Amino acid sequence: CKMKFLISIILCFFSIGALASSITEHSKPLSYKESEEAKRLDKGSKHVKVYAVIDRIFEIDINEGTFKIEAELLLKWRNNKDIKRLKSDFAEHTITGDKMHEVLEHTWHPEFIVKAEIEPRSTLFRTLHLNKDNSIELFEKFETTLPINTDIREYPFGTLQLHMDIVAFTHDAKEMTFDPVMFEIGHEEQDTPVLVGNWSLIKHYADKKVSHRLSTTDQMYTQNGFHFIIQHDFNDALQKIFFPLGGVVLISLFLNLFSSMRHKENIEARVMGQLTLLLTIFALKFTLAGEIPATHYLNLIDLMFLIATGAIIINLFSSMAVSEWYLEGKLELAQKWERILDRTTPILVLVSIGASCYVVF
Figure (cartoon, rainbow, N blue to C red):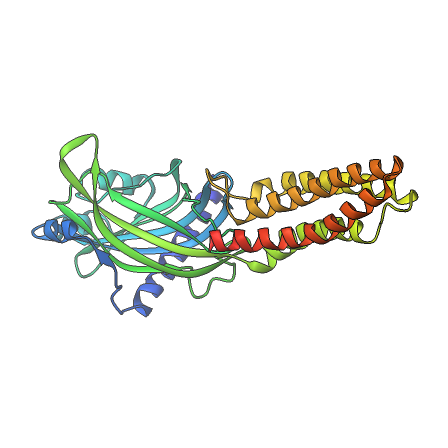
């Protein structure tokens, strides 16, 4: 237990040092959007500076609509009255553990919740730091699970908007306001990637607004939003989705073109080949189910699967019908429809793909 406690303290100081380094290196004020309601309530309230660093964004599950985030948050405010008492009571300027909880019970401090989190955040560690300029810093590193708005019709193209909102918990907007001062994605010296998985970060930004609660009708609470826009890597979609799907459709079309059922030995191979390809499409759809957004509408990938499935079903049933005509001796009818189907099915597939792209984009 003592060893775990020592390791936690070392990690804690390392994270605070890294965050402090980021604060000094980014002296340029953060530009953020602020709602009119938040501006109006700012007057006369205690201002708490908010420094945020996102350490990891991982387990992005667009099928379930969730992702996990590991973040560091530092809240800084001035409190001349309490800090004099605290400095006289404690020799050290960084307070952790039970001592910190005891201090916070008798000291004014900001509290926050992570809005819309699916389960309560897991706090990795917290510290309280007393500065020489009579300001107080409350640092917390935590991990939580948040929902995703999976409205991405162009998937695997297009962008996905993720966000983490913190809302004041005990003090309303008239008493206290959060001012986002710094928002970074990872530390500069961080070796491991912040965004885990086949995703790329496009941009990130912060905003400030107020939040209303059902628990009270006459109070509003300050809220800071930290947004990051990500994009799915195209190479991953190409390897996992477009190459296999395109390959199955091409095999189906070429099977029709180069396996004429004028030769009886091709009949079984053609029908069984189309049936095998149809089962392959179903297996591919099942395999990729966890990587496709579950939406109430058809996105691009859904449409591609529908086109591929439709093309193979047409080829399968048309092959069965034409083969029956050949076996019955209706050679002219069979040859006529075989030529028509061999020419029109590829055109129908191309037109369907073009129409789907037009509708989506």
